[in-house]
Image (cartoon, helix red, strand yellow):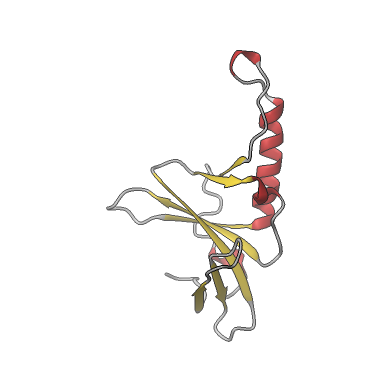
Amino acid sequence: MMGIPAQITTLRNTKGVDILASNADASLSVGIQVKTRQGSSKAWVLTKKAGNNYSENFYYVFVNLKDEMSRPDYHVVPSKIVADFVREGHAQWLETPGHGGRPHRDNPVRQFFDTDGKYIEKWEELGLE
């Protein structure tokens, strides 16, 4: 795959980071959290902590596993964009009446959407090239 960093390491026991990626000379590195889903929808479930967990060197790679015959879509998104999206989206959901006009009750579930595909294959967002 073009644009993927030269060094990739999976991490265990590192909260919130699944992969540590660096450029070829290891002078730059980023943490990546991977979220997957199956089907054609471009929506991923996150937790409340996604609204506050961001930094300049932290990214999400949202993977859409379409079907067994198709290559997955990879959505590469800076964590700050995800945090803003889930905070604002959840606040809007809470303000919108639910079934029968009743207010929604707060819960820890959050979602990120990339329905227009703005972040598909945006490996350059990692800044490692």
